[in-house]
Amino acid sequence: MAIDKSKIEQAIRLFLEGIGEDPNREGLRDTPKRVAKMWEEFESFREFDMTTFEEIGTYDEMVVVRDIKFFSLCEHHLLPFFGKAHVAYIPDKKVCGLSKIVRVVNKFSYRPQVQERLTIEIAEFLEKELKPKGVAVVMEAVHLCMAMRGVRNPDSVTVTSKLTGKFLECQKTKEEFLNLINSHKKL
Image 1: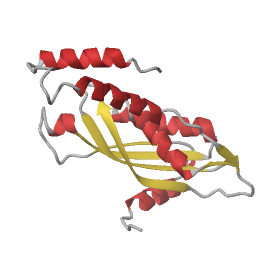
Image 2 (image 1 turned 90 degrees about the vertical axis):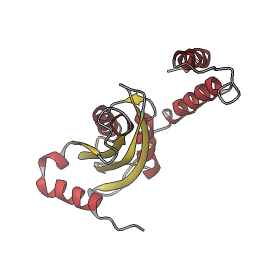
Image 3 (image 1 turned 30 degrees about the horizontal axis):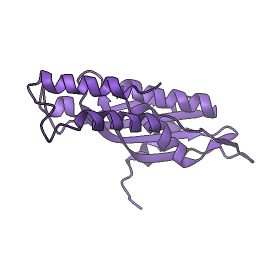
């Protein structure tokens, strides 16, 4: 997807006028350009090389990357939601670099989104790329569309999950994953 910076700049200028602001005043003069540049930066997070490696041996224990900080925008109000993602997979001959898991979270979060779809997209992408024995994704987020408007409840946290393969089929595997992401020991 290509970013059209001029359209973004026009839209932000119209938005500022629409809420009664003067887009030519000093503090707002460069805002349309800054917003366009921000979206260009977000787009760059979405493209990366998902390098995988054929695993030698029979490593079949889960790989977990927890507490991945993410930021996204609620597609209904264009207000931020942010939190932590916990992602795991059980390899079946293929592994990926651990940073790729963080990049997958970024790939799908840096755009207008709903948390439910974001959770599913991360899991489905890893399923497709790694063909593992199972994937687990749990996301915890604070939504500013609930915190600063509407119900105005800043302390609520939304949790979504998507489990596939062994994480869904085997209660023991699911419990191990949940225990690992809920242990609050920091390195």
